[in-house]
Image (cartoon, rainbow, N blue to C red; front, side):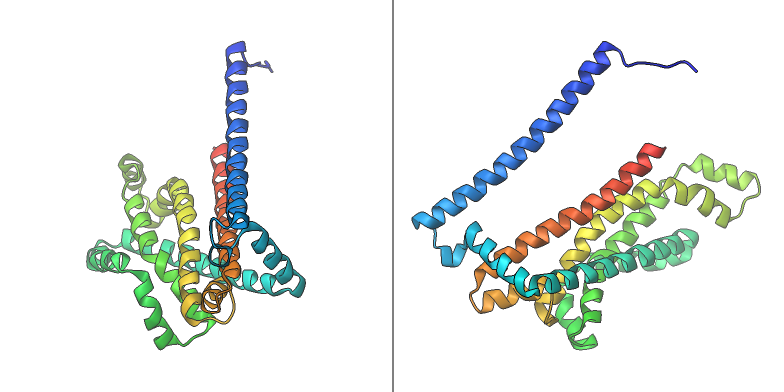
Length: 267
């Protein structure tokens, strides 16, 4: 077996690319540190009101206190669990519905206008109705998370299914394949990058939906902590919860992004 070695030009390109990525990471960290330092300095000098705007040190003290009594783990765990459950249901129901629409022209023509209409509705307006219909419980919050992502997911998947290479579909039909053969051997395998891309969007939308639900009908979770903190003027709770939500969103997105990269590298 003949071994191939990268040329000098390729080595230089790889070195430049690695240097660029390292510089980007360093600049990101420096920008974050600078922002936090300016925030803390402005709070200590009285340029901003630290009671209203809090400060990194006050949030850190608040976080340590809630770590000691375990409440932060409870609220964070509840929000993450509700997000993952709603995300899993969005993936399953969204994919199944998109397959149904793809397989039946009549069903798609009947349901498509309603899906577009429901997708355009402001989902925050649905949350109070869900509380009235289903009660103030965890099931309602999960449904709120689903409602934010499900309709857009179905539309994107269904549209993507129709953009599959027509020649491949014709080949399956020419060889006597059924619609199920077309789905399993052409449509779904070709749509994996699309499905992963839609999942990356949906995980963030589900988190947003869960937080909206927790704002209105929860006694646990980061959304509840934000609302309760704003009501009793514990704004360090509010800002700390927002920071934790940002970290959760980045972590969940990174996991799906990692799965997408591994799939693309295998191809």
